[in-house]
Image 1 (tube, rainbow, N blue to C red):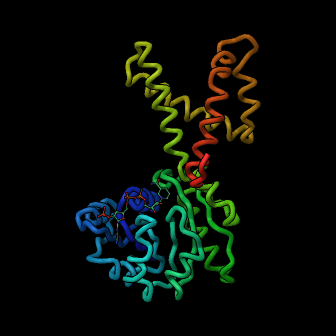
Image 2: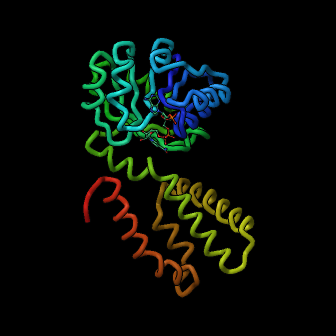
Image 3: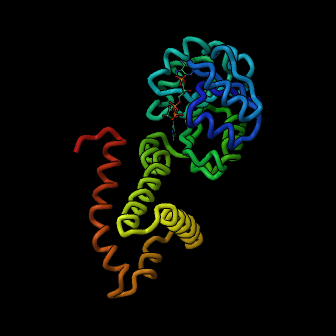
Length: 250
Ligand SMILES: NC(=O)c1ccc[n+]([C@@H]2O[C@H](COP(=O)([O-])OP(=O)(O)OC[C@H]3O[C@@H](n4cnc5c(N)ncnc54)[C@H](OP(=O)(O)O)[C@@H]3O)[C@@H](O)[C@H]2O)c1
């Protein structure tokens, strides 16, 4: 399956690196597409039409607000379109690409290391074989979760944005440690290693986060004190962040 990427920014780069095979790619700034193409031995197209003409599947990696302008250039030349555009519904996608088979995906940045969490809207296209092919293509760079579109915004607010949230947690923990005099590089290594081990432990325990909290927080111990301080603001913060992602006023 020849892959074409419209856009050569953060997600396009991460996807191309994760797939590890040549892609056709474009960007408004040609040098950006050229840099990505060089990274994966691919081809920087002169324009979006060239990407569409040389791809079996076109993955939209531009910004959501550019849907109409890009579709105006390539809609007639794309048989399969995959959108990773946050907030753009399948109906909106199909309206922009009426002659294409359209799929809505929400990956995260961990596609780069083939460990992403990837949502795909449940198939209603009637082409089960093609849906399976798209799932397998994205399955190369992570774990794919089919989901009703009514839950897609929530998935975006959990796994799409997740790497940034956890990076922020890491950053604030590093800041707290360096405020105590620990060397920043050492603090980064401690926090990174702890995140890695903790997430592996969580998965090995069937994602039972309560069990892990219980086992680390011996009654009267230091973890219990720290958790007591963190629990409420963390719960409130993540709820408010979900509201913000969903565009809901508090
Ligand atoms: N970042 C994430 O972690 C993440 C996760 C899930 C989904 N997404 C979705 O992925 C998409 C891209 O996000 P990003 O973070 O990769 O953004 P980004 O780094 O800003 O990349 C956007 C790319 O689109 C290009 N572009 C703009 N207008 C174009 C046009 N008319 N034709 C062709 N290319 C055009 C830009 O080129 P120039 O720079 O030359 O203008 C740039 O290469 C967004 O829709 C976002 O919702 C992102």
